[in-house]
Image (cartoon, rainbow, N blue to C red; front, side, top):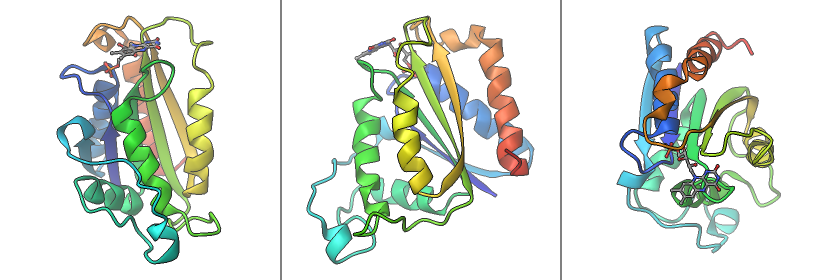
Length: 188
Ligand SMILES: Cc1cc2nc3c(=O)[nH]c(=O)nc-3n(C[C@H](O)[C@H](O)[C@H](O)COP(=O)(O)O)c2cc1C
């Protein structure tokens, strides 16, 4: 079983990255093959809206550092998508990546990816109230379902916003470890 993480935070001691890595670490202990992509270390552009992926190719025409990321997500059995909350949205780095997943869709908007896979969305914010930004994951989940991610999990870190503050959130670390077990066992 292959699990990859797409990491949307540029921070060294990122809260979302820490939680995503915790899932990978535990999944590896359970026997999974794991990999990660730190988007801020890559060089890539956003979707050009050229529609080549609808008219001529079954993949994105742009060849840059996201090519390997898009391929890995396409092939993985489970994917961890991690991002900080920037102004009520995912980070710019993550949004550029997600726009390029447009290439996973056929011209009629059916998916080119196989179904029966799982995703975890890790979303960290500075504000303590989880009522804030509750709209973000459902909007991405709608597309993830279309891409064949049938089981979708969510971990939300709600403050404090300082780098590394997730180390005090044993509840979230336990949630990450528990989710790793679910991903590897394939039991939602
Ligand atoms: C540019 C920027 C915008 C942010 N906007 C918000 C926001 O709108 N709401 C919020 O709760 N936190 C906001 N934050 C705080 C981050 O979401 C918070 O620090 C989070 O833990 C970062 O995750 P990371 O450690 O994985 O990068 C913002 C931080 C930055 C740098």
